[in-house]
Amino acid sequence: EVQLVASGGGLIQPGGSLRLLCAASGFTVNTHYMTWVRQAPGKGLEWVSVMYSDGSTYYADSVKGRFTISRDNSKNTLSLQMNSLRAEDTAVYYCARDLISNSVIGTTNYYYYYGMDVWGQGTTVTVSS
Amino acid sequence: EIVMTQSPATLSVSPGERATLSCRASQSVGRNVVWYQQKPGQTPRVLIYSASTRPAGTPDRFSGSGSGTDFTLTISSLQSEDFAVYYCQQYNNWPPWTFGQGTKVEIK
Image (cartoon, rainbow over all chains, first blue to last red; front, side, top):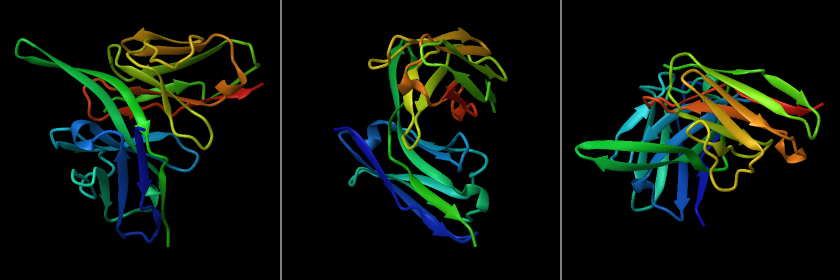
C-alpha cells in the first residue's frame, strides 16, 4: 500500500527547533517530488518546501533560511528540519507526494503535473511559550 | 508569486442542488490548476488536474473549467459526502505552488 506517515510534531517555544519525519511505504521517495504543506488552525493550505527527485530543494519565502528539507534514501524517509520557530509556524504539517511524469521531445524535457496524490496524516506543531 | 483567490469563502447549498466555486489567479497560469477536496479531519485529495481532467475515482458530478486566470469547479448535484472545503492550486512556473484560501461548501 502506498502510504506516508508523518511524525515529530509537538509543543516548542519560540526560537526553538523541531525535526519532522515522513516515512514512506509502497514507493521510494527519491524517485518522486516530495513536498511539505502546512495548515494553520482554521486556515487554508500553505506550500512550505519541495525536494525534487534530483535532490534540488525549494522553500516558501516565509521559511527560507530557517527550514531545511532532506531525505534518507536508506530509510525511505523525508525530513523537515525547522529552526528559529515562530508563533506563525504553528500548524499541522503534511508531507505529500507530487505526482509528475515527464517526457523528452527532442532536447526538451516536458513535465506533467497531476497534483499531490498521496498525503501523510499530518503532524501538529505548536510554537508557544 | 502567483496569488490564487477563491470565492465565495462559504457556499450554502441544499443537497441535490448545483454548486459553482470560483478561483482566480493573479496572472495567467494557463490550465495548470488542481482542485482538492478536504473533509474535516482528513487530508486533501485531488479532484481535478489540468483545470478539467478528472483522475480515476472522481465522480463525474465534479467538473472543472477555465484557463488563464479564471477557473471554476462545478458540482452538478450535491451529495451529502460533498460537503467539504475545496482548494485550488496553481502549478504554473513551479515552484512555488500556491493554493487558494479555500471555499467551504456547507449544508443549507
